Length: 577
Image (tube, rainbow, N blue to C red; front, top):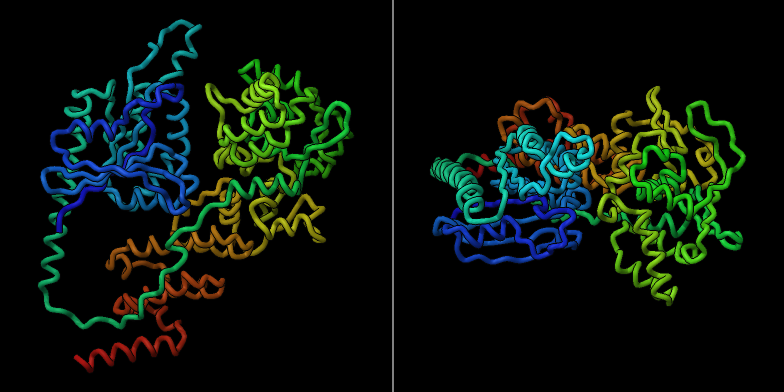
């Protein structure tokens, strides 16, 4: 069999403010210029959700070694497609992380949101990581107080080196994508790790060959391999659809927009609007004018909206306001108000279908100047420095486990956890029924939770807010699976099943024999909580590793018939031998 080297590259080396869409990528430039690379072929690959997430290059290196490089420029894959991102890292021999020196915003997002996820994934394997900082700094820091903003606009070498230390990675600065930096600098380091990977694989191949030459031992009983399970295929996220449906049904709406003549009303939710825009944070008191650096946001808020003062009810003893009618917001611009339903659909669907909003606005207004006026207002409302912000799971993360805008408190194990009904109703059908039906919780601020720990329930809520889940252990994943089954969040249940299966599959036999983790207890819990996929797989896993598990005390806890079946098959095989 020919040897194979898998390389996975994450991140975008282009400037966040660059208008040059033809700017060459690091991976493509290296493959095109390296003298060791031949027979290059490329294709666009999609995740199981069906969204194109990376470009796959296939080539030959060192003559006859297959090289597969997957270049994934969008970090959103870690949020929207946990299964694909984990599979990419798990199958990689070398990982390349790249960013633009002149895009501090993207670097900060990488450092705060995605490096912790990569570190967790790398705990399970030893893979060399190369961090490539690309570009020449466009401004030089100076000591003048007026240049403070300039100093912050590019990423320093010290920050890059510190990030590399966190990941145990090799740090490179590539000031240009020319022959020197690509072939001699980046290429030299990458090819060194390729050779190391090939040497390791050759050594493992020799060990496997020696094992094959040994006398065949009596095999333990084998159950039939379970049929292909839906969990292993992954499950599409419906995060954006959940939030969009929240707008359509208007459950738990706490904002009512009116025109100046109060003739119609458009309802929305503070938590969604504030997660999308600093302007709405200012409007609903989450931030003060002093917290907003951009004066145009403050000016737009004052000229476009007026929040009507209502009768303030005393707050709950826990600091959560009592149930009050929706906040009335008057929109002073009638043209803007006529397009408000389309704008809200744009925000609730993820704020990334800008072309569709432009088309809908122009079609409705039939006046280019008015349409441009409305679109400029939307840009001002949703902007972050230099670009429109995409409303996604990292935005709602800001309000996770915080009393800001919270309208419900969960009491669990003598502790309290604040939350937002709109998010809970949108993401969980059981909670939607609980807060909108004829139940006590519908009119209560304090809601008790039983049967799960505080940490497990926090992990459950974090999934509802962010659509991502990173269990720290098999036991934590099992507890989260139980909570997901309790609230009927099937996708989270499948993610936990996949995590448990992946962890057990990667566990060496020696560790499996010495671990204190009870696989039999996991099997019983999986059966009790209707996790058919996991229980079927665990049953097969126990049978496959019969010689290990038959020596453990908990093996006797299996049902009598199941234990007898294992032993009978083993005796039958011994007799045949």
